[in-house]
Amino acid sequence: MKILEALKKKQLLFDGAMGTMLQKKGLPVGLEPEYFNLTHPEIVTEIHQAYVAAGADIITTNTFQANRTKLEQDKLPEIINAAIQLAKAAKPKFVAYDMGPIGQLMAPMGTLSFDLAYEMFAEQVIVAEKAGADVVVLETMSDLLETKAAVLAVKENTKLPIFCTMTFQEDGRTFVGTDPLTAVLTLQSLGIDAVGVNCSLGPVELSPVVETILRYAKIPVMVQANAGLPEMEDGQTVYRISVAEYGEAVETLVKKGVQIVGGCCGTTPEFIKELRGIIDRTPVVERQPEIVTAVTSGSQAVILNDRLSLIGERINPTGKKRLKEALRNNELSYLLKEALKQVEAGADILDVNVGLPEIDESHMMQQAVQEIQGIVTVPLQIDSSNIAAIETGARYYNGKPLINSVNGKAESMAEIFPIVKKYGGVVLGLTLDETGIPETAEARLAIAEKIVQTAAEYGIPKEDVMIDPLVLTASAQQEQVQVTLETLRLLRDGLGVLTVAGLSNVSFGLPNRELMNSTFLASAVASGLTTPIVNPLSEVLMNTVRALKVIYNQDHDAAEYIE
Ligand code: HCS
Image (tube, rainbow, N blue to C red; front, side, top):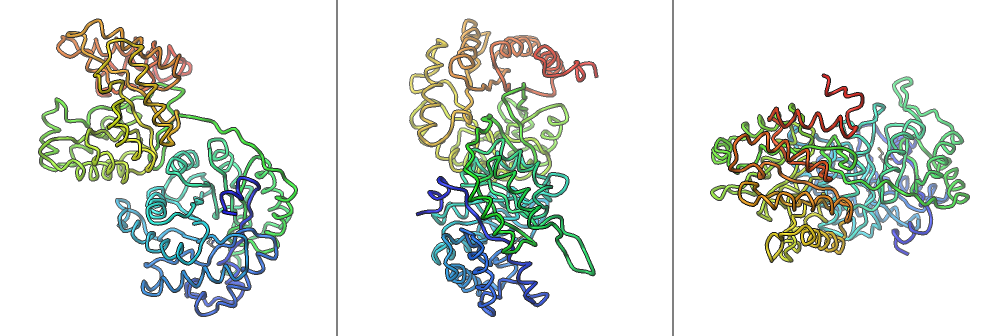
């Protein structure tokens, strides 16, 4: 039976620590533990066998740091191959190839590039699959972007399932600042097979983090905690939690729906034996995760269901002379200033559109995404009519982006949906197709339904599709403004999707555009618009937003309004 089939039937039990077990067996200080696969295979085997005897279903290979920055690159294949054979020799049901972080900070915070991280992970997993691993466990990850590079490396080079656990500190965030909500929403969108936490803390301290993950995870949840909080004693790290206490805390989590458990640093075969008993007597718990439409950055999730969220429109060259000039001159600092100004003014998401016929849009999109996500924490909207630019943006983006856009034309859906499915994201569907923009709300709704249905055929759930009802110009097609509002109502009440609309089209060619835009915003929100694309530097518009938040009870006690 394959590991994912087994997981559908029963919880799965991993083994416990490797590093701390090797230390107990006298691993010489300073030597990377992975060399033991070649120099002391009998010790590694002994540990694997003890875990199998304790009841582990899955044995993790001794390859946590088996990457070319930690080990000699030419020895890597031999070490990884040996590790997998040693795990197999213990005869577990499944062998997990252990892939840890590379151990360097990702650019722009550090120097490790996304492409190099990808290349390093790829060279490892190709060997691991050939050697016979059943699953990759990507563990102790702190950086979502590095994790994404690893997930893509596995997906693009192997057929192996991926379990991924990140490691959280006592403040509830990873070392580089990712919170559990952001982690679960981003990682499951990338199409991994199980998500969770490991290391750093014990099972008691990790419980709140795990509960957030359980609340939103549509895929199985995994927990491999340390044997309590590590303490220092005579220069040695010690773990003090008892096997019974560890078991009690893990049992509580299993009863809440955690499906994959095991141990991390400080745990031993006795801990795994205790977990075996817990799993054997606990039926699998059916969870009902919360279904939300959400986008994320590396450190922040924006759930779009419950409140008006603003997409800042200023990084889009249409009608913006100065931005066009900046794009032509590769003047990224101008884009960064625009980004910061909009966030400061209250944008929840930033549009990034860098399309100009005379520049290499894909290359500019990559640079813009990498630079902007390095300085702001809000999620981004990858916006282009160029498919290659959309794909590049989605690939290098650190999070779950909003992808703008697809439309009801067969060709557009065939090009965009595979990108959304592969990289994860929320896709924005425009209500137009081969016949153009329909003049009735019902016909626009029909296109929206077609988009949602076709997305589902690609494995993109309805909550990851938003619809743009299309705002036309009041000065040229006045009667169409009401059609847009009616479409919004049908999308909300009939189809049940969230909506995005650019406001400024409505006022094109009219005087006092800010007044028109703001008044239209109020009407559109009343008709169901959840996520307008706006100029957050417009005072009139932002005042309208503040008032709307009071009216729709999103600003409690009008606190922000009064301020
Ligand atoms: N799974 C590895 C790394 C833990 S952080 C080990 O040594 O047990």
